[in-house]
Length: 263
Image 1 (cartoon, rainbow, N blue to C red):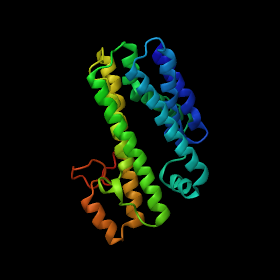
Image 2: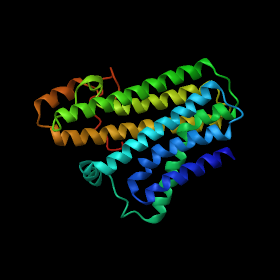
Image 3: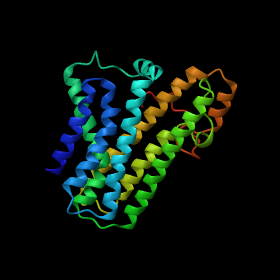
Image 4: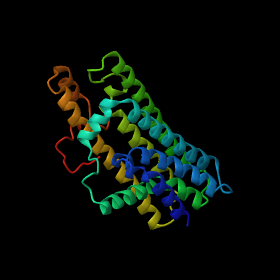
């Protein structure tokens, strides 16, 4: 029953994608995660622990921050909208059945991503060491993502036509996506000691692998865009040759050739 409620909430919110296709994976994504966090606090109000409250609250904060940021960018940035029209299908040529399938798949993914928090509450798990470790990883991811956004905005105000290679962008070229990976790594790790059945493991692993795949796909899309914009800049070429694309200290400098990555 709890799964059906969470799935219905994710479906209801991500249905924004029927208004604009990209919203299935942008506004629908962020606000669905927030909706799930709110639902967990309500559904398990009599079974909350310190950890489960913090995790649920962070899901809400994460989703509102992401959804709000994307909404503001949609409204204010004409260049962003033009870029998205070029890079992401608008769904106009997709038949209605495929749109329904995309909608259901996205809603299921969002529930699976947040499922470790749900399973912690459903299994009445106590506040364990693994949970606190996962929380620490998640917080680091949230901080990294916020710092990356601040750094890039500051850099673009100073020089709108130059790529950003300051601060955390010296660590990896896509620190925002690295922050996302850390956030969901923390959520997944937090449940590793409390998953009570193979199905719970499948849901948690499936959600985690899927979002990591999406982040690598996003990094590929960004790399292709930046190669078009800055490919002839010697400084940019030097930057990409010494700075990993997504994972720090791992010499993976490009994913542009991997066409199987979608994001």
